Amino acid sequence: MAFPTETVYGLGANSLDAAAVKRIFLAKGRPSRNPVIVHVADVEQARRLVSCWPDAAERLARRFWPGPLTLVLPRLPMVPDVVTGGGPTVGVRMPAHPVALALLRKAALPVAAPSANSANFLSPTRAEHVLADLGDKVDIILDGGACPGGLESTVVDLSEMPPRLLRPGLVSREQLQAEIGPLAEAGPLMATQEAQEGALPAPGMLPRHYAPRTPTWLWETYQDALFAAATAQEQGRRAGVLRFGQAEPESLPGACKGDTPIAYLVLPCEPAEAARQLYDRLHHLDRAGLAELHIALPPDEPEWLAIRDRLLRAGQRGKK
Ligand code: TXA
Ligand code: MG
Image (cartoon, rainbow, N blue to C red; front, side):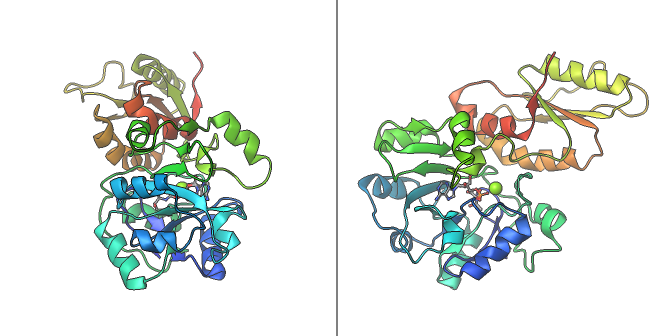
């Protein structure tokens, strides 16, 4: 069953039933070593899945739950291997969406749920995205409208000291550090090395993930993105541009060549609002029949970390 959370839609199953969780992997085409997050209705339910609940977990849960934060902790044996990717830890999160919470309370079970999309594809932030991607594989989709957060949860590993930020998200590194002190960072290089052996630390950190199907290039400036798109158009390849900033009232200079103008979308220059719209806009561009998509990245600054993280996995850097 797919259901809305405040971040993205999840594809859920009883986390204590290995066969049910395997069906999620099948529907997504997800590699079996990739662990899934277990969603809980309250802190007590989370504590029943883990072998220790350190002070840092207590502080973070008190401060950020229900909300977009996943805590990775040593698991108890009752959590099936398929949930943890065979690893010794389990990720737990109490979502803030009223539909997700109602479902969790009604089910009275911890619910394993990755994002409700085919492996490595864009996460869904509307029921329509789930329907278009997995409609033939999912029996029920609860439609809660657009997800208010729009970006997957922050994942922090508390099973080691110092705690490690595995995936940046709407709860920022600074907010986490204010509660529990310095965090170690798992850089993408480490992720790919570790990914070659054993359980993946957080496959959301793999170089290619969260990606549109349209070939996508990333640029540091709007001018470079626009130039690349205009070049593609001139060579007969329909191109799109996505940028962050103020929408321009008049038409784009040089954007209209022949009958097919460059598909052009602007996301807000405020990070939370941009996050809310990001996947929806990418889904939209991905359905537009483009040969190429050129994205001008937002600034390399802490408040844009989560969005840059996802975009840097959505495509490859363009070369001038
Ligand atoms: O916001 C979210 O987190 C959404 C909603 C549905 O809750 N879920 C989500 O799940 O994004 P998924 O499976 O698409 O991404 C979960 C990330 C992956 O990068 C996974 O590897 C990591 O969390 N993860 C889950 N359990 C883990 C564990 N025990 N150790 C390390 N990483 C873990
Ligand atoms: Mg995902």
